[in-house]
Image 1 (cartoon, one colour):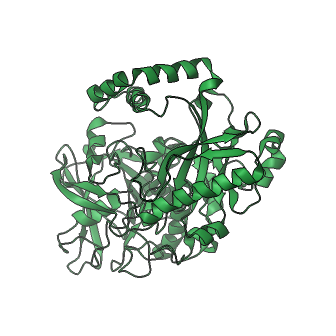
Image 2: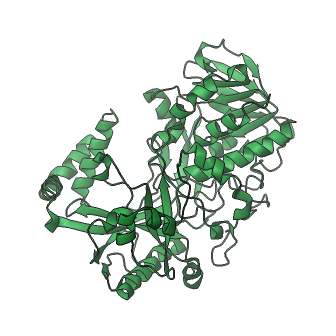
Image 3: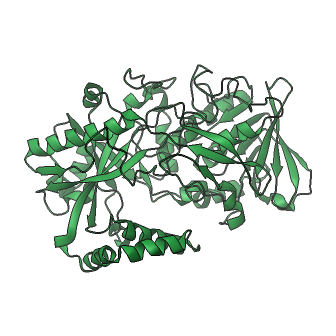
Length: 531
């Protein structure tokens, strides 16, 4: 059942068994998993069923780091959440991602991959993967084309990592009907903006969630169990709930908001390879040309330093993709033009339009060259670029905080300080070297390197892939994490957190299927608590 909270009388108190905050992949998975158990569930979604500018504006915040992250548009506030942005690539975390690695401070989950393996098959079904097989050998058997074009890697120092493609699943559309027909056992409240977690005097028990509407109405939701499944907003909500604890809930050790991570993504270097036509398409994320093709490869075969190489080199987990593009497409002018076009496609007036237009005009010769080459498929301008997609080292000083500016609900906005360290930079530099040596050993060509030294500043163009993790990380030790191994906030009996914010490390893989697997695991745990 779907209910617009704006239609509910002001100051209404609503009682339920489980109250979930956030209607994205984690929240919807939890709600679906709890259906049919005889328990009443409420799912609170900040937005409606469709995009709304006023609600989206609640995402806005300040990024004070050198490498910028767009807080306003990187996340979506309507039912389905940021799965509306999702490209659909899926792969589980690797075994080493869960382990304590001596060369990576604060690495290690409270459990190993064996704990997660029973939950992945259900996550694959939620993400609509038809054949959940992540073996490159399997796909070589299925596809003669791939078999004939696959790079002859030896497994060390460079191995392979398969990513499978979801349709992609838009959770808000695919699972809406199931929640509509659930009746009173699952009520989805739209336009429900949680502004405070209300706790008892000792901060041992969450008592209710207070919501505030743009229309000025206030409501309360009381439950036996509360789950925060709202991405970056998880840390923000804990920090905003400072009535009982001045530093916020779950923050006795100043850990809430810390250890923020994203995938360090950098396009740098050029692969100059003698490989069969079409080979690169098997090692590329969905590109400009593929978006207009009726059929695309059902998988991506990424290049990855082997587990042994990662240990020998003392680096983080990383994968590398190819990206086919044309001369001029990486210039500031062409990037600004794409930024304008993307905003228009989304039906929005482009931000910083005058500045971006100036950048396009100042780089007009390169923009015209790139447009010409792509329009006419001029191979003389075609280049094969390497795209590095790396785990970020856990960093206590990389953090989410509360700023001083207020949003439309009167709540303090987010401030983000995303910090990359020496290990993040060394990982990409060492991976470049391993890749170049592998190309040479295979006799297929070389890698032209642009980013060469740890003493150099980060190249322009480092981005986060909008993959936000950490800030309410998982650890058995409350001094190093916000939630325990069952995703329960330390010290609070009935408050849980779901989603990427609990990840202790990020791995070198896409988030959604792993977020869903963790949500399935949490649902199993909560069912035991509700008996």
